[in-house]
Image (cartoon, rainbow, N blue to C red; front, top):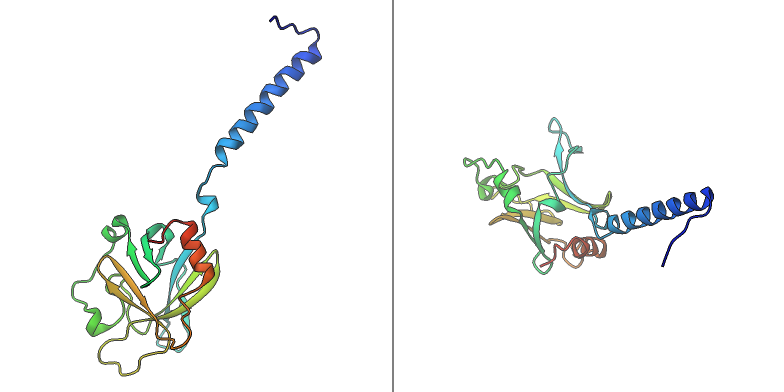
Length: 177
């Protein structure tokens, strides 16, 4: 089969069709499942400023979905990636049982936390109080476990951790185990 181009307009149409096909192929390759399809999950710390009652949210999250290796939905245990754990600066002089909080995250009671999915606040809570604190707040409480944290529920009848938005985001990011 012989291909003949008779006019300049045919040549331009031919090259234009090739460019269009190449652009379509580039977009098809670029539109595979990527981070764009994932949700952003961020854990922020809220701390008191100058021992006042007002808690201020840190500008940068303490960890994000990229730092999570797996999330056990039944127990709400979060296991961090090896890279995240290796980058932690753990103060060996602290004891989360005595001091409360999280030695792993270098955050101590009465600091609070908030969980966001795609910039929407899902829920918040506190870090575990030390043994000398007789008051146990009726909220979600973070404590350390090996290679991660546990978010325990102290809500009584309502468990704020069981949130559909958070579950779908963890599922979308393939973090549920």
